[in-house]
Length: 507
Ligand code: NG6
Ligand code: CA
Image 1 (cartoon, rainbow, N blue to C red):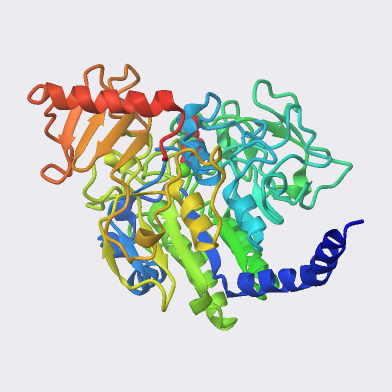
Image 2 (cartoon, rainbow, N blue to C red):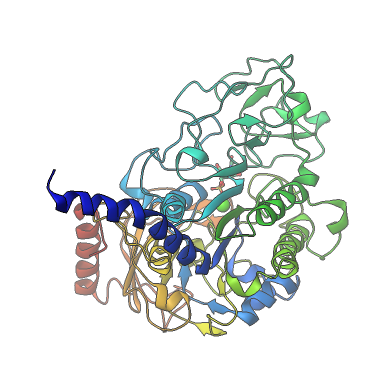
C-alpha cells in the first residue's frame, strides 16, 4: 500500500474526532431558533401592529426587542400551502394537492426531502414540532391505532407532538412522535371523510347536542359538544379538550426547550390559536370585549409569554433567535357562530390591508412578523419585503449551510434583512390565494381568476379581469389601475408566468 494512503488514513482517523469536536463547538455557538406560528392571526390583531380592543404585551415585547416587519408575507392565504412552502422553500401552488387538506390526507412533503427542519438537523440542531401539522400523515389508508408514519419525524424533526390537521377537523387527538396519545386499544379510532361509519351523532342530525352552532359546514362528528369536519368514532380517552389545547401544547413546547437547553435547538411551535373553533381556557374568557376570537388572541399572547419566560429562566434569551408570525390573514366567522362578528366593534383584524384569509388582496398574506435576538438583531421596524418561504435559505445561511441547487426553489437568503441589518430584501414576491398575484416593488398585479368573490365573509380578490394596484400610494388596494396601465399589467403577468413556468424563482 503506498505510504501516502497510510498517512492519509492515519490523518483521517486521528483528525476525525477533532473534526467532530470542531463541528459541535461551532454548533454550540449557533443560536437556538424558535419559530412560533399563529393560525389565522391578522396584521391588525396584535397591539404592536395597532390593535386597540385587545392587548398583547408578550408579542409587543418581542417586537420592542426585535425587528417588527411591516411588509412580510405568508406564502399563501391559507394554512396547508403556507406551511408547505415554509417547510420546503417551494411555493405550494407549483403542485396539485397542496390546498387545505382533510384530516385523513397523506403526507405531502416527501420524506428525505431537503426541508427546513432537516437542514437544521444537518447543521447540528435538535428539532421539535409542537402543535398544528396540517401537512398530512402516512401514505394512504392510515391506521390511527398503529404507528403513524411518515410524518414530522420523517421530514426532519427529532421530536413531535402535533394535532394532525386543524382544530375543526377530525381526528381530534394528539399524536406524539408515531403514536396517538392516550389511546385505549380497546376503543380504536376510525376516521372517514365520506361516511359516518362509526354512526356517532353528528351536528347535522343533533344540533341540540352542540354548545357552539356551525354557521357553515362543520356539521359532522361531535367532539366535546362541537361538531367538526369529517367523521370519527372511538378513541374516546384520547380526544382533546379544546379549552386545554393552548395549555397542553405550550407545556410540550416548554418541555422541549428544557430538554434541549444544551442547544442548539429548533422549535417549531404552531399554535391552534386563533383558528376555529375558538374555545379559549376559562382563564381568558372575557379578557376582551370581542368574545372568543379576542380572548383567543389573549390566550395566544400568554403562550408566547410562557415560551419567552422559559428562555429567560434557562438563560437562553440572548442565544435564541425568536421568530413570530402567522400562517395566513385573519377571518372573523370561519364556520361557527362564536360572536366574532357581533362583538368585533371597530377592530380591524387585517389592519390597513384589504381582504383577509382566502384573499388575494394583501390582507390574505401580509401578517405580523417579528424577529428577536438580543444583541444580534437591532430593534426597529422594517419595511423590507419578506416571505416565510425564505426562512429555509436564510436560516441555512445563519447556520453556515447552503441548500443544494435543486432544493428550496423559491427560497431566497434574506438573512441580513431578517437580522435587521438590511432594510432591503426581495424585489418581488408571489402571493397565493384563489388567484396568484405578483408584487414587484410598489406594483401588484392580481391574475384574472373566475373563482368565488367571497369566502367566509372575506373578499377573495378573484376577478375575471386583471387588477393592478400601486401599493405605496394605495395600500388599501382600492384603485384598480389596470385599464390605465395595460403595459404594466402585461409585463407583470408575463413575469408571473415566467416564474411559474421556470419551476423555480431563486437564482
Ligand atoms: C375551510 C373551513 C374553515 C377552516 C379552513 C382551513 C368550512 C366552511 N370552512 O374549508 O373553517 O377550517 O378550511 O383553515 O368548512 S386553515 O387555516 O387551516 O387553512
Ligand atoms: Ca390558518
